Length: 281
Length: 281
Image (cartoon, each protein chain N blue to C red):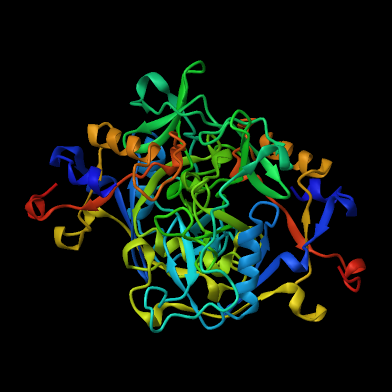
C-alpha cells in the first residue's frame, strides 16, 4: 500500500471539507468524522444543527458492544423531565436509507457480495447499488457512522449516533441512515471497555465516557483544526490500490484470492502535506 | 437469536473439549480459546506443548492493531541471548494452511463470497472450500486465532499467536495456519489500547500487556475451569439461526438482504447449564 501511495499525485487527494467534518472531543483526544451530505442531506444538516446548538456537549458514550458498535447520545433520552432539550434542530427526520442511483456517483467494484447486487464507492464512502431497483446506499463498513433509531423507520434524526467497531454489520444497510465515517481516531472508540449490559450498554453511569464537545471543523480557528486529506476513490491511484489488495504481490503472501471484500478496501487518510498547511481550504 | 436458541435441544450443544481448550490468563481475566485439531493437528499439538512447558507464562501481548489483530509472544524473540528458550516443543512447523476437502467435514452456506468458491462451517469453525482444487481451510473471521510466521510459509509454529479483532482479514486465508477461535473473553483483547508503532506494535515495553499464564483446560482442576458449550454447526437449530439472520423478521428491520456473510454468522457459546455442571466432560 505504501508503494502505491508513494506514487500518488497531489490531485489524487482531497482535503476534508471543514463544513462537513465533525470533531468528537473525548478525554482521550479527538475523533474526526467526515459527513456524507450527498447521501443523507437532511440528517447531515440536522446533526450539524444539533452540534451547533451544543446538544452533544457534556453527553456521553453510552454503549460499546464488542464486534459491533459504539453509540453516543443522551443517557436521559427516555426521561422527559431531565433529557437534553433540542432547540432549533429536529428530534426526528424522514429516513434517508437509500437514494436514486441515477443521482449518485458510483464507482463499482467487480466483486461478488452477499448483501447487494453491486458494491463500490460513492463520494469516497463505501456504497452499494441495486441497478434493477434504481437505488444506491452507503454500507456499514468499519468506522461508518449512523443515526440510531427506534422501531419506526422515521424515528432517527441524529441525536443518537453510532460508529461501527467490528465486522461490517451489513444487515443494517438500508435500515439506518448513515451520516458519515470516522477518518481519524477510531481507536479512541474501538478500544473502549465494552459495556456489560444488554447490547453493550454501560450499566453504571460512571462507566459512560463523557463527550467534552462535538464541533463542526469550520467553526474552529484554522490552527485548532486537524488537517487531513482523503485519497479520491475516483482516482487511478485508488484503482491501483484496490488492485494491489486483490493481488497481494508481497513475498509474504503464498496465496492470493484475486478478490476483495468491499469493507476490506482501505480508504487512505493522511495529514495535509506541509506545502498546503497554510492554505485555507 | 434468543428465540431460536430458546428452542434448542441439549443435544444441539457440545461442551468444549478440555484437551483442546486454552485459557489465556491476563490481568483483566481469562480468554478462552477453542483449538482446531482437525484442521491444524501439528500446530495444535505444538501450541499445547509450548503451553505445557510454560513457554508463554510471563510473556506479553506485543501488538494491538486497530481493525486487525492482537498478537502475543516473546518480546525478545529476535534476540538470541535473551529470548525464551523452547524446550520440547518445535520452534517452527510445516504450514497447515489447508487440507484435503474429502477428509473434512463441511457444511456449506449458499452465499456468494469474494474470497472462496464455497464458505460454511467445519467442526464448529468458519471455513471455506474449493471443490475443484479439492482443498478446504479455516477462515479469518472475528476471534479466530492464528500462528504468526515470517516470510517462509513454514516459519510459524505457534510461538507467536494472534487473534482477529476487526473486519475479517480474509486475504490471510490460506496464508497462515489458523489454530483456533476465541470463544469467551475476546473483549479482553479487542478493547486493549492500540499500539502506536508500525503494525500496531507497542513501542515501549511498559505498554505491553503481561500474560500471567496460558493453560490447557484439562490441566486445571474441574472447579477452576470455565464450563462452556458451543452450538453445533451441524444442528437444525444452527440452520434455523442462520436463516433467522438472513431474513430479519424483527419489526425493527425495514429491509432484509436475505443473505449473510460467513463472518456475520454468530457461533453461540453459553455456560454449561446447571444440570451438567457436576458431570465431568
